[in-house]
Image 1 (cartoon, rainbow, N blue to C red):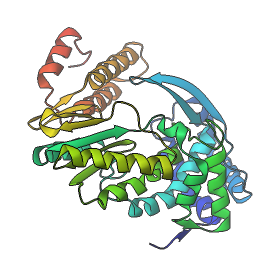
Image 2: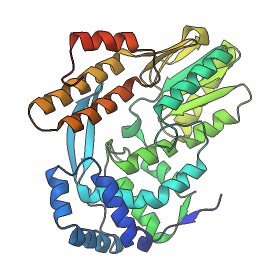
Image 3: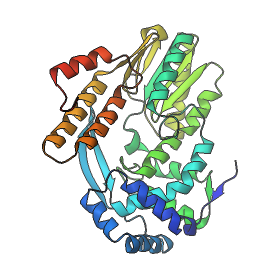
Image 4: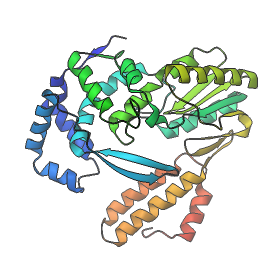
Length: 335
């Protein structure tokens, strides 16, 4: 696959910035920072265009806050100007990365996602006897800047764009030369592509019957326990030596008939259940939007749209009985 040349003029081009603005502002127009930007959108976009061409972006200003989903995570939210900039970059870079990746990775990709990943996992546990499952310890904070740069340069060229990538990668550090900010669009794409080499390692392994990755959650299937263990050793060596990453303790080598917890689901050969984490998220989100409605902060139509989004958490699961029980104990504001 040939490397793609992207110029700063491509990124700063007017229609590209307008598209980036709409994407960055989606569902956020009520926020003060976004509203101020939109109030003078013409001049704001002109300023971003000039800053791109003068190689002054990203600004690298982050607002940090902590979420619990269910474990504690620190989110580093970029300023709105940088979010527009990130979308402007990925309008051009995302299709290149998308074309390069295998169809076995499901995060941050059009037409893929968590529901399809869960469906594929269930299909594979019905067919293959053993699986190995790992995830990465402190994945986003552990991504090595130099390795990421080398990987991205296999797909992109052009001195100006390379310098731009360097600025995006190095504007945040968790430790010296490592880390991507959780919450940035570029981080999602770059972190997903960082493990493309592992996808290819598994794809070329004759003892691996099938494999799936959702960001840093990786599972593979083999015909025997010994094969799954041998694959684990090869995966661990690749991650340690090629990506400077460590596998979390608590990796799994199990019979498929025992089922697997993956992407917030408990997946068995005959049924897909919501995990406790996903049930908690369902209830918390529903009650949050109902509080917003009671306070007059959203309309009835907006609450109905929020209900639809909340119900998507349960999509594809056998959870009707649990949801009926939940609604009985916490009756909805709108029926």
